[in-house]
Image (cartoon, rainbow, N blue to C red; front, side, top):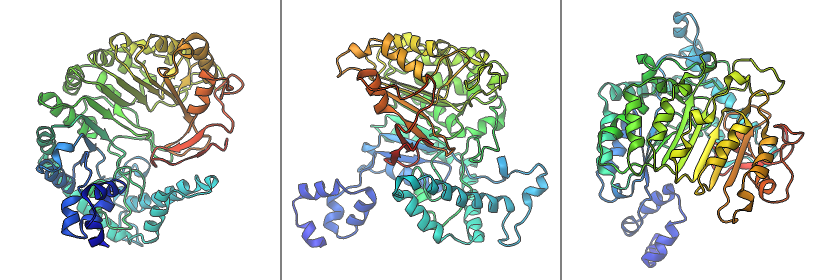
Length: 514
C-alpha cells in the first residue's frame, strides 16, 4: 500500500494528506522515505508552559527552517500543577493536607481530586444522553478511564511533573523560550494565554506535547493556574490585590507574555487573547485599579500600530463590595483607548447573577448600584475599524447596551451578547432584542453587511462550558419574521436554540428546554 501511494503524483499525495489530521500525517510519514520527504506536518501554532517537554518541542520548531516560518500563534498554558491542595480540597488545618489515604498510600487531597475527576466524567457523559449519541471525546475518555492507572503510579508521575515544573520556573526557562520564539517566528501574529488547556480528565482542550505524553489512564488534579470557582461551586475566590506577590504569581504567564511583547519591538504580534474559556475565572481585574509594571506593558502592546484583536477574560469577584474600582478608575478604558486599529474586541468576566444580593426586583441580575455604564469601560469613539464586538457575563441595562450598539462603526460585522444579567429596571433579553430590531438601522442595511448577532445564555442545569446558543432564532427575529426567542418579555427560552460544549469543538444538540 505504501509503495502504490508513494507512486502517485505529488499533487495527489498532497491532496490526500490534506484530509488527514496531524496524527495521521505522522503515521503516513513513517511508512516510507518517499512519503516522509513528500508529506509535511501542518504546524501553525506552538505550545509553551512551565514544562521541559513543551519547551523542548517549542525550541525545536523555532530552530526548524521547515516549520518556523509557518507558526502564527503561541498558546501559553498558564495552568501549573499543585504542590498543595486549594479550594474545596483544602482543609483549614494544614496538618490535614498531609493526611494519607490508607488504601492507595497517596495524600488524601490527591485521592479526592482524582475521585472528583471520575464523577465529573460521568456527569459530562450524562449531559449527552438526550442527544442520542455520545461524542467521540467522551468515548475516548471512557476508554482511558477503564484502564486508569493505580493511584500510587499516578502520584509518582505527578510528582515528577511537579519537580520538572519547579526547575523550569526557578530558572525561567519558559520565559527564555518565549523570548527566543518571538525572534524566530516571522509570521507570528497571535499570542494566547489560558488556564484551560487541560480541559477535563482525559479530554484536554489542547493536546500539548506534555499532555500527549501522559501515560494512558493517568488521573491527576486538573490544574487551572488562575484562582477559579470549583466545578462543584463550593470554592469561590475573590480577586486579591494585584500588588500582592502571591497574586502576581498566579498570573505568571500573563506577566511573562506582556513583558516580552512590550520589550521586543520587532515582533509582528497583532492579537492578544487572555482566554478563560468558559471557566469561572479570568485575569485578576485589579491589575486595572492603578498603574503597575504589568499594566504599563499591556498598554504598550495595545498602543502598537496594527494591533487588531484583544480577547480579555477578567475575574471580578469581590468588586461588588468595593464599587467596581477596576472599571470606575478608568485605567482599563485608557488602555483600550490606545488600540486605535482595533478590529476585534471580546470582553468577559466571571460575575455572578445578583452578586451583592441587593436586587429589589425578583429575577433580575442585581441592584442598580452594581451597574457600571459601558462607556466607563469602552472607548467606542476610538475604534473606527471595529468588525467584531463581544460582551459576556456583565451586569447591564438594555438602554445602555442600545446606546453602545448604536455608536459602533459601520464596519461592524459580528456581535456577541452572552450571559448578560440585567439589573433592576434594566430590561431583559426579550426587550433588548425588540429595541435592537426597532431602534437600530441594521434591518434596513444590505444583507451582505448586516451584523451577525450571536446570543448565548446558561443552560437550566449546571455544567461548565455548556450554554444555549440562539443565533439562528435571533437572526430570524431581527432580520426576518420569526418570533422573539425569549418569551413573556423576560430572559427565559423554551425548547429553542442549540446547546454547545465549549470544550468539545463541533459538538452541539437541540436544546431540550430544561
